[in-house]
Length: 145
Image (cartoon, rainbow, N blue to C red):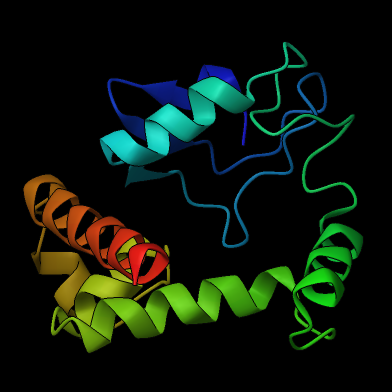
């Protein structure tokens, strides 16, 4: 995540790689936006260390696997957790909160395919905000339980 990709509360991810910024592009090559709830923006503001990457480092997702294993070991939980497990957990949370797979797919930038993506040109910005706000509130509730 790059600081310059955060605009007006949205994480705007260019689909194409940018070698100058160390940005790898999105997995499917499509530009994408994700709403960042206020609680997330506060964490990001606190974590900014001036490197350009929101959570520091010399390149995108550098060392995240190792960092997750270290954290999991300290917490004495599954030491084989990967960053992809976080993505899977997020997707499951979206559907568990009854927003459905369409919402999960939109937010996680999965390509739909089919004729629906040709005819439906709605951007779903407000709907995606609601989903992300609900997921953030759910995670906050879990941390306070």
